Image (cartoon, rainbow, N blue to C red; front, top):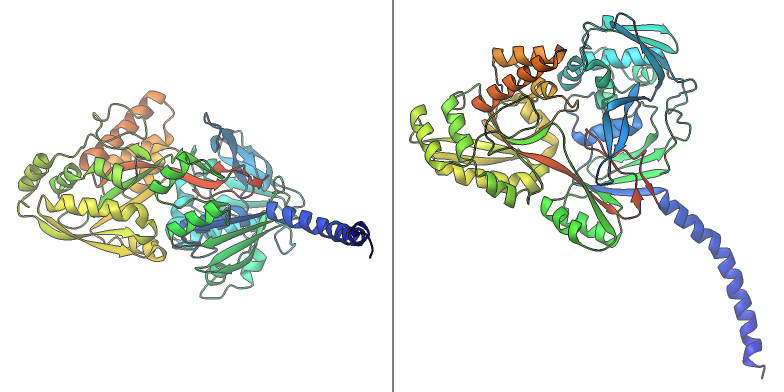
Length: 537
């Protein structure tokens, strides 16, 4: 019999060979894992076209990494060590530089040399012109968004040469340049899009809903609506530092409990749509998951009332509703304290934004206002909310329903599927809604331009009209005197908070839960992660 040592030597040699052969494969697998980010959220994009009418918030995220804009915002570190975009700093993206004319009435952009779309064709000033013309022509949100920066007419766009684009200003507007750094101002591959245009669809809206024509840092590798969207890095991207992540897999997982479990097990890397209760608990747990939270600037959850129809065209009815809303209960049971209260203040004293209203829960006052309004016996109505936000909206709406019953208002609850919510609010026929709105450009007059101004944009969900408020908003947009500006802002906040077409409730938090090895997350105004900045270690 051979000694045991002699028997084991060949086995050890064989194992050593196997381990050596396996080691590169293990290293490759580890590298691949570090280069792939797996995300899970309640629902994904309803289309791939941010300029498409009815595009939802996840569609903003598609545009942010699949398309480029002429410019973007900088980045800053906050006091708690987390990162946020920097609204005060514009940086090059597709345009490597720009100059504002001496008279302040135009700007010239110089496109980055060598920039291409995903199909390899060069990005030209013609593509910029076509993309901006398309945004104006699409109607609805894209058109209103461009108008917010005084970009309103095709005559403003000029192709100087293949690499140079001029934007002519209609007026000197501080929002014009910042507005070119938002998702709607994405640059499309016009030649590719035109191949799919028709006489009835000159802007290829139908094709671009399900197909991308961008040149951003990531390409859409596949998209299964309602299931997942997969992005692959565009290695030829030249409009910024090449992302470290080679692939992003973003899955639709409707159940919040399942998303939390997947995160806890390490099956996903990041999620940013969980109930506040879950974020509260995870922030206190010790483990491999971390939570980053940022107050969402220029944003509020509110109870909106349709001012165009009875009974909410009656000021005292609206004030009665604002006086019976159970604010503290909503903060505790729907938001779990995660947010900044927008109620219980002492009145509008200056132009600071955001600030709380003076309303608080006062049942006796609410009953008296209903009596003065001629609705002492109450009425029947409905409260609608986006089912995609049910984790917060449903408990809040149930509490509001119970409170309204105390002043004779019998309110049924209508749950609108998330994919239909934007279309539903566009119709403006719902009596009451519980909703969230945030303004991309961080100015109070921008928020009010969208949410209260008589132009009646899609986000003026209450169909509110007040000429005095309109004039103050318009004046503030172009005011250069700091003292006058403060008074103008104070004026339109005071009107809105007195007439309460919508009842402000809370400034929400942007909460994101991720594995501890996920780095580089940055808060952005459009509330979608910039995967170009994220990496794993």
